Amino acid sequence: MDATTPRADDLLMLLAVARTGTYSAAAQVRGVDHTTVARRIAALEDALGGRVVAQSGRGWELTALGRHASETAGRIEAALSQLAAGGEEPDPVAGVVRMSATDGFSAFIAAPAIARLRQRHPELTVEIVAAQRRAALHRPGLDLEVVVGQPQTSRGTTLELGSYTLGMYASRAYLAAHGSPRDMDELQQHRLVYFVDAMLQVEALDLPRRVVPRMRDGVTSTNVLVQVEATRAGTGIGMLPCFAADRHDDLVRLLPELVTERLPYWMIVRADAMRIPAVAALADALREQTALSRAMLDGVG
Image 1: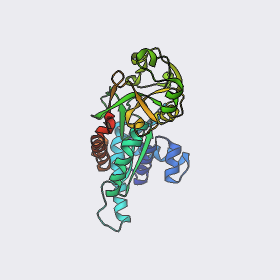
Image 2 (image 1 turned 90 degrees about the vertical axis):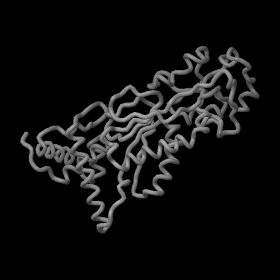
Image 3 (image 1 turned 135 degrees about the vertical axis):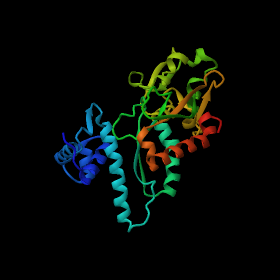
């Protein structure tokens, strides 16, 4: 294909695909239909002389050429925003940033960090995909990920944010009905509240097989907040993050001298995304909030 000058509208269409990961979602953002998105992307590829997106099982991913083109599209979008603001210098920390993190981190670390960041930068929008999974920055539309365990990836910049502690918890009502375990043998006679083993994607979270291998499952969930509520409801003994469990007075931590597990949080930022002020600002805010929350994450505050 012979390269020509691309149209600005086509570049903005690519930006929508990059942010959403699918043509149908990009169509909703741009107010057009699915076929129009496909036609505009094809026109852009003709203009640039190469593929800008490639399809995978997870949606549309940017190619190297597509990432370069989307950076240009971002600058066009910023310039248009400046015009809409009457020519005033726009806040560079603006627009949409999409991140992925575990549900616990999203609720207790990311949410307050973003709230403070948006007080300073009200034109910033952050989309949080709450998921417990391995790092994979080739997922379409993601600028930043926070995962449990050190990521095995060379895609992007990685940084260990800190760690958090897990312990065994039961409700006061449950202990009154079933007794409080005095040692590991008695602990393992109870049913466990934890992740769904068959759906667990993160090796670092495969703790029960090592720590309490004889405990049978009681209630399992892919969502740690559901695990907390199931433990509070008395369905069993939960292996829970201290930062999520300690805020509930009806939960009691059991045998902390015997069961105290620490796991690290890692942040991965797509290499080209770090050049975007909004992404860099969000990364800084998450790092700062994690540091401020150290006592909570350690289970001592």
